[in-house]
Each structure stands twice: as C-alpha cells, then as structure tokens.
Length: 142
Image 1 (cartoon, rainbow, N blue to C red):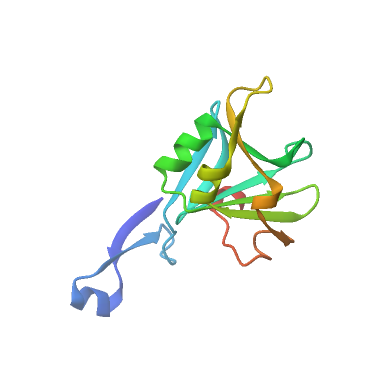
Image 2 (image 1 turned 45 degrees about the vertical axis):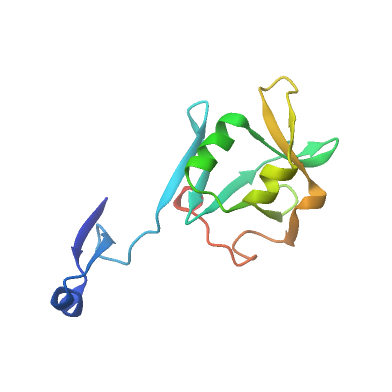
C-alpha cells in the first residue's frame, strides 16, 4: 500500500509531499504490470519493460525474441522506452530500445496468436542478469 505523506520537516516546510511505502521507507518507482491472457508476464518500471524468459521461449528460426500483440499494446500504453529480456536458461540479458523494436520487428503467428519478433542481431547482449547489467528490476521480479 502506498500512501502520501509529508517528506520530513524540510519537505513540510517547503510544502512538498512524497509517495512513501506503507512502512515509511523510500517511494516505489511507478510501475505497470503487463498481462497476457490474465497472467502477469512483464513489468514496466520508469520506461524499462522487463521480461523473464524461461526454457523454450526464445525463437529458434530466426533466433530472436517475440511479444504478443496484446503485450505490445500494453507496453506502448505504459510508455516503454527500453525492452529487457532476461533469459533464465542461458543467464544472458538482452536489451533494445523501443523505437528499434517497433521499426525492425516482423509479424508472425505460429499458432499462439499474432506476435512481433525482433532477431537477436538487433539486441544488445549482456552476460548475466538484469541486475548485473545495471538495470533495476520491478517488484514483479523481486
């Protein structure tokens, strides 16, 4: 639960407020949970969209990452600026800026519904987790 409260004596004197967690600790960044068929699949935190991908989720031919059109629409509404995919199988994190994804992704439907996919060559590859890459992760993944 997030509450709005005065940010200490200095904040009160200046008339400033701050969104604090219920326990009074520092504020949570704004985040949006993205759903696919009612299940949470991604989270967008301050413009960075995070996805944890399990075994078999990466496209093999061509090698790349795909997103359902339903997810893409939510990412667009959430103000996504960067996509981050953390491959749990290989422990590699892939990042790409949103405009590149939109411009270079191709459409496909291999029986799971309409999607757009971006070949691996367009992604920045970082060995390790999103945290290792210096990217903050959202509460869905904590």
